[in-house]
Length: 250
Image 1 (tube, rainbow, N blue to C red):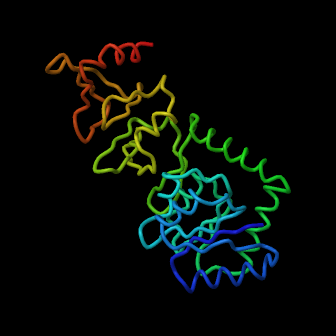
Image 2: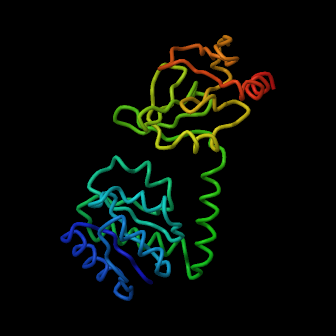
């Protein structure tokens, strides 16, 4: 069993190494890395380990950025001092989420989970990860969103529109509430039912059931008015008007 540790705190890395030597003495710790940049380079130039223990907050940014640059087909155990990242952690191939300070019991549980998931066939797990990634890109019936101090499921039928501004994305419900999302609008396009939702422009994805009426706008464009207030006007470009009309009546 080959293990990789991604951790920028020396004391935390030493503690984790010591616990792993106790929990799984036959395992080999192939490396300890402390930055996002070095982690990307490592994955690009080394065979995939069997399991990665990955701190979320590294000195040069969140470790989630690693997944944007390289494909990681092995399971991940995330470690962090905060619980606010649980949602993101479950969106990549993580098998556990350990809160610091990490103890032997938590590490043993994570290693046992790895054994239960992978068995002896390493390639089989890689295939499972590919399947999980494909499923994540498929339509979702609901999203796990932060609301006040809780995580709650938000169903597609509860979403009136999604809106992006200043690199933040929100779903607005028919109930008037606003929920932060951890996806880009581009990613949401692949998760929302295209029969019910339409990408009106760079800022908005709208639900058919939320449309109140449509106004003809300057330059042969359309202004879509929803049944609730929106942060700005929803303008459909002239080039997309035929497609939008077809979607609306189909």
